[in-house]
Length: 207
Image 1: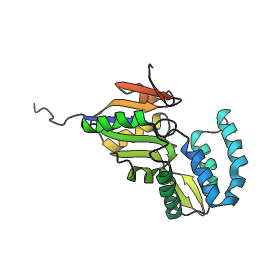
Image 2: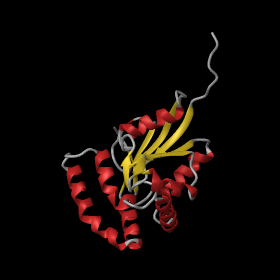
Image 3: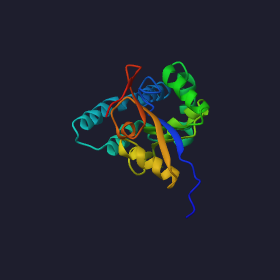
């Protein structure tokens, strides 16, 4: 019997908002867009309404994402990406968690592949990783249709993060050696070493 010589890929996975990035990117990007396009401020109360529905478990994460990002209506993807590039250049690195970054940098040197899995729209998150290079990232996918953004598939939350990793590796074995998030979620349960980030501080996670 011939044994497989394929080695297990060692990876580290981090959430973005309030984990690697100290703030909530969906809220901060809204403020940024509103400064560029003042009429977008009108979406603020609509966003509060959908946040309330989500908190009351009246809508799912995917539906929440789709409605929350209505403020991007009529802004084509290229324009959103241009704004996102400017936004992240303004935020990075000052508003990022230095301890998380230092740990990720060390893991990189040790040959661990680094991935981000976030519920944020890939559309505006992607330009961040021109500034901080990683091996891959997964966010919520969206298609621009008739002037609005519609979520493609599921929001990249909870178990969907594991599904996206499985899809990426296409059957190749991988091991999550470290994971970081501001919330208890499946990605932490799957990791050899997991960290909860609360108020900017790293605390060992116990499932």
